[in-house]
Image: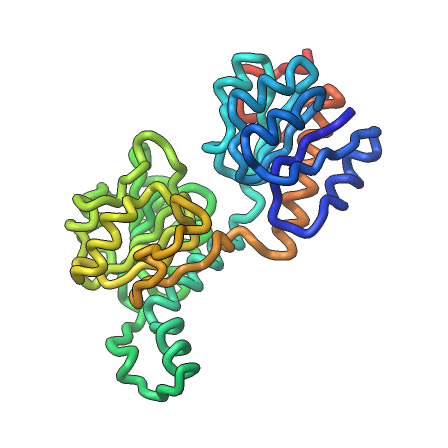
Length: 324
């Protein structure tokens, strides 16, 4: 049996091979994540493990009828054609909670960096300018308001940490009720209130038809001119052209972006070149601990399905009892 690994962000596949090699599975390491490459390699595989590469209908159907499972290294599912997998009776798994602490810590790091102008001041010092005035105004976090757009596992980890710094925390999600927020000392508000009230807005929602481009010119126009946006969720939740325009016009004060629509962004990207934008290379999920956990759990989910055992985190509920 073989399992195709479409792409990954670590040096090797030793951890996966240990888990899957015990049942005689050979890993097929794709040289790139292009659709044609993956479709060519998918023939005859029992499983597909994918990180960011687009696991399309073409790729999934190229692996039939042997394909038993598609497993996502991570949380979001926008790179997998789940509908196609479901149509063909193929379970899809993911790891929805592996990097909650890591993303929450990265979010707080970006929040602190925006507040204290860490990247800007450090750059000035390296360039030979020892002058606090190059970074003013600097703002304390205590007493400020953080708005969380989305209130899932990661947002709740952020809320816990933010309150330690003295931040008032608001949260918005279309289906959010007050009670879950109250448990975390967070206030549930409408989207308009969150946009107009928050000093910092941190995005923690998936990429869906409803959320793509949600932070566009209209939303940016409702924010404070001193407000900053932080995105450790999905790049397309932000209309990047509208964000660049708002930052250039002083409509909002700053942004910190760990995720982008195109990764890496193209040459001459406006947002990367802006002095009031902090950019990190989709690194929020990354820690030594989180990667070990992610790789082991993804491999085990793949193994479980191949062995006829129900996985721990099944995406398509149609196969909740597929073992039967």
